[in-house]
Amino acid sequence: MQPADLILISVDDHIAEPADMFAAHVPEKYRDQAPRVVVEPNGVEQWFYGDVRGRNLGLNAVAGKPSDHYNIDANRYDEMRPGCYDVHERVRDMSAGGQLAGLNFPNWPGFSGQVLSLGKDTALNLVMIQAYNDWHVDEWCGAYPDRFIPCGLLPLFDADAAADEVRRLAAKGCHAVTFSENPDALGMPSIHSRYWDPLFAAAVDEGTVLCCHVGSSSKTAHTSQDAPPSVAMTLSSVASIFTMVDLIWCDAFTRFPDLKFSLTEGDVGWIPYFLWRSEHVLDRHQGWTRHEFGAGISGPREVFLRNILCCFIQDPVGIANLDSLNVDNLCWESDYPHSDGIWPNGPEVVSRLMADLSDDVVEKITHANAMRHYRFDPFATRPKEQCRAGALRLEAPDVDTVTHVGRESSDRDLEAWAGIAARVASAGKAAGAK
Image (cartoon, rainbow, N blue to C red; front, top):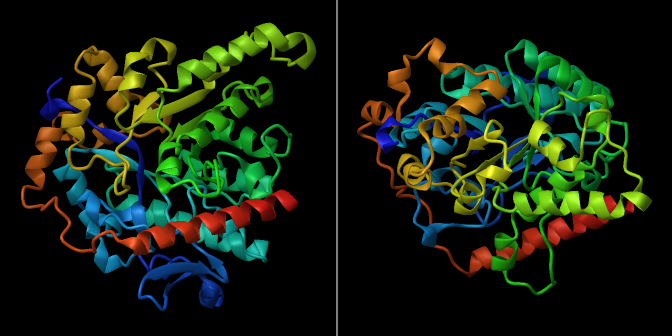
């Protein structure tokens, strides 16, 4: 399929949330306790929720920059392109990149919104989580309902409250929520407990997908203390391997056979091996592991093929092994404005990568699967021919796709990386001690 003919819906983009996002959504009596942006001594802008430090923007807001301008440090809003934080400019950037729509994950709250679950007052946490969701669904996505798949945050500190929020969001038309890739790493009950059953039940009832974004456990792959940054960047998908293996051996699917999880930003080329390995373990070790699958479930491969969605940006290994995946559960992602993203060249990359696939399979991966799983129908308000990459690009011919602000990479970024790694290691130790 030619680049101009593609219809591209990304199931993984991000928002560098604007500093005023809570202004219209937090009740007045709580406004002095709302999350805020602080200018730190080195001049960068950093989100805080009380004394809890948010995730920085750094590599999460580099769209349009040459790689020698990628920064690890927290960054400033005036050092990124407006499409990172301004919804109107985001839509112009999407059009310039030939992308119809996207599901947008949070940035500073953490990819599962975990920062907003860390406050000492859980009632206040819930106020802020709901304020975030109202801003995201009503203001960000609501501004262009044909261009965004809404994705809400959950109060991870209370499974019943999380279930209630799933239902509240579904009433707003939101059928995707963030869930940690490993809640145990956040000091919460694991998916192998029955703690999350109220949430799982609500997700099934409402047709809501639980999205497990890589990095949403506040942990990164760790080898040795003195490993260079390239080691961790290369191993970024490892957390998704852990998540998938946890899921395919989880007994929740015996109770909730229609429950859907998604693996986000971990790519897919590694999946065939671990599916083979899981079936090997079932064959060789079932005698002593005594793992029980529900009636009618043959094993972990079936759980994956039926219950787990996955996605990729540009993964030729995954494309070469499509016969091991379920193409009805496979989606494409752009990852704007992150450093792995391919904006504004998505149509060209996808066309080359999928050149040998049938148009039917290409359509499933690029948009049809996302529309079905997330109950999103842009064609209801926008003619299908106007959803193709070529037509979208004609809507934004004046967009400069090169970002002209920011600073060159330097030793400052290596120092920032070391600081982030130290904080992550400290948080992991603290969670493990609980």
